[in-house]
Image (cartoon, rainbow, N blue to C red; front, side, top):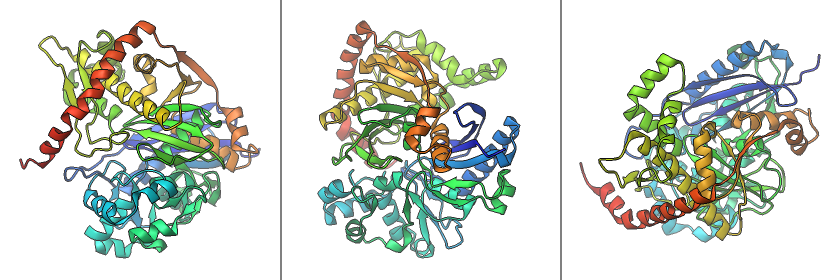
Length: 509
């Protein structure tokens, strides 16, 4: 029997998820494993790359075992990841420093230096995006300036999926979807930009080759086979960002199609036949040549809900353990008892600074309008609504830049909540649709791997053969009008508090 099964792995912000599916997209098994993030100082966010690898080995072994499939039946494996992440490794692929994940904001000083010395308009024109600690280049400069011994030992700077690909197949590479997240990329040529690399003073030898997402970059080594349970010589594709994988999971293969992905963060994804040239949103690579993604990305939407669960949801956590359910489901039941507008509580979801479209490291989360009448359910609903308001802000920004959105698909862990899906439809006043099998970015990895392994003649054909459409949520006109009023208040709050956020960041305490 020829190999026809696919494995997708997504190295996310809070954990690794994997699935094993058939050629038609039927999921046979899924697994996940969490790992910690270290916040050693304000603005820092680090992870251990070996924790990603250990979790990847565990979940791949689990999906093979749970499916009952033979390892030899796996045609290919694809890996996506949180992005961008700085993984500095030596010539043997061993990390020389903890990974700086996308949330890390320590490179503000390097950003100030870039703004003073590099033409930011050239960055927007060549790469797209803006100078901000979120992107890779400032993180590299921090490593060069603040950890020079580690920088000197660095052979290649990988992304999280690139590290897993190296562990699987021994290859050093970066997939093209990550390119625009570096600030060092020529989006027209789909290659590194010598002009930007030279302007920023980065050693080009430390940057790995850029390859298409679907390209087979190697096969599983004997050592990786022993660690993961995969068969030796299983093809490994280059992979992609989690946002790119999510866009493929819902079939964004035509210009104008859009989706939002909510996990730790919320990410708006719009398919386009032209790359984004502005600086309020940013571009992302697409696995199909000639297509691009326009992206609006927040920081801590699902993360805010997780924070609430961990800090204020002890009762729900205990009750969920007793009932064998998810604590988020119990919190969601309470939120459903709160009316639209969350009993006049508005939440700013800036729990760890914010990305688009405000780009402010000093911004922080705010519950506005809390009273003695406020319930726990009101607070949970306010978090959900605040995420939807932030998504609407990004949608409006995209429309102003020439990328309108008429409907969205919803993917990611947040799409499990029917209440949250309906809130998004009402706040956006647009229909939202779920995929037929909401399996997350790992399904996008499997789809692209199917094309890379030759099970389909193209990614478009793989999408047609593997993607199905699920339920839709239609906006309610009355609720949409209510949310219009609260959205105006949401938009007024950040400008009113911006100076206070900066003052708060500078207080020594």
